Structure formats: structure tokens, C-alpha cells
Length: 137
Image 1 (tube, rainbow, N blue to C red):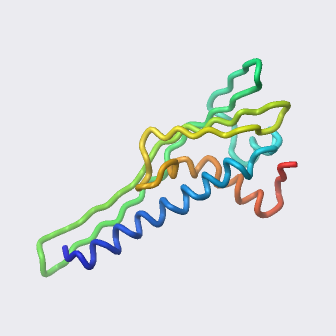
Image 2 (tube, rainbow, N blue to C red):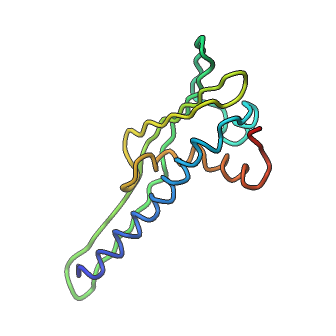
């Protein structure tokens, strides 16, 4: 495949994971103060819950949907396939019924950006926060 065509394909994959990584990073600050019931509403029921003297920890294990770009050139016997998917563990630390901190641990990264695989957990919360359907304080 021509290098002129390969570079735009690589940039497209990187661009998708960049937006997700930025949103995940923003969620780490924007969702602090969110009440537990609103977190359940926007992120769903956690996969695991643990209590400690410092608060409650809700953990969500999610996989980012697989995405792929593939193509070939009919006049050249060459094909390129680029795919990205990932798995993430997102943990919310709740104190007195409100989000205090958020931690991300991606087992496999989606695309090229750190923590982009965690986007499915916080995407709904960030959208509802933007729309005013939930509030942090």
C-alpha cells in the first residue's frame, strides 16, 4: 500500500482513541462530587463493590468495542488492516455517597492512547453531565 494512503489511515485510528482518552481524563475531574445514585444511573450497576474505612469502591470492568480499518488497492496485491480494542477496569472511590476519586487500569489499550479503553464506562456520565441531567454538587 502506498505510504500516502497508510498515513491517513493511521491518523484516523489515532484520532478516535485520542478523543476517548481526553474524555476519560476529563471525567477524572468532572465527575468528582457525583452522587452514588447518579453514578448508578449513568454508568450502571458496578461489577464489584468493596468497603474500607476510607469509603466504598465501585469497580466496572468493560471492553471497548472493537474497531477496524481495512483496505487494499486493486492494482497492487497488498492489503492493510488496522484494529483497536481494549479492556479497562474503572474504580470509583465514594465517600459519604459521592465520588471522591476515579482510577483507571487498562489491561489492553484501545488504539494508541492511554486509558482510551475506559471510555465506555464514563461516556454516558459525561453526556448526562453536559446535558444537565445529573450534577456533581
